[in-house]
Length: 246
Ligand code: SF4
Image (cartoon, rainbow, N blue to C red):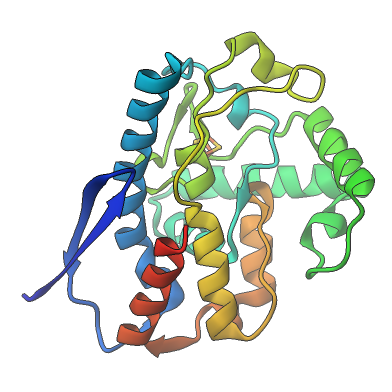
């Protein structure tokens, strides 16, 4: 089978991706495996830089899951679709368990009056409103449906924001990020942003991130849009242009 190989210069070094050549026509989520390969290498370089230049150390460690326990965890609609497909492919009873966790989180957001705030299509939101909603969301303590025994149950396929959120401040601050802001490793490429820009270019609709907890519901509402297909060559080229733009 022929393959697609990509090379990119990031922080003075080359990173590579290598995937099987996609079909001529694909959905938007077909670019995720390529972008994840590039993202993982860019993250390694960013961590090396933080360590070498600023003497910073990543304090995230296996078993520390504070950020999976209350944060809104913003995912792009395309990633939400990939997560919905992943859940659909889970064996039972795991599939029903994960779905039940998603449903419980959605019910909690609805009861708190926050669901439509986070799921509404792009609309102007004042910074104060966004901050308040984020605080209210955090206070609900919604645990990510994929968190299992304090570890990510979908590690290889976790969203860009989960990959890129590497903290260098004391771990205690992660439980109270509004009052004690955490420091994170600066990333050279915003892959979630590149995915949003790519989606917008193809779907012709403004795209924004949504909390991971609402991913299945979002896909239920927008499945037709997320299942549209496009020429793969144009899609991959656009996505890589967005990545190269940083
Ligand atoms: S997908 Fe994984 S890393 Fe991301 S919030 Fe959920 S459990 Fe945590």
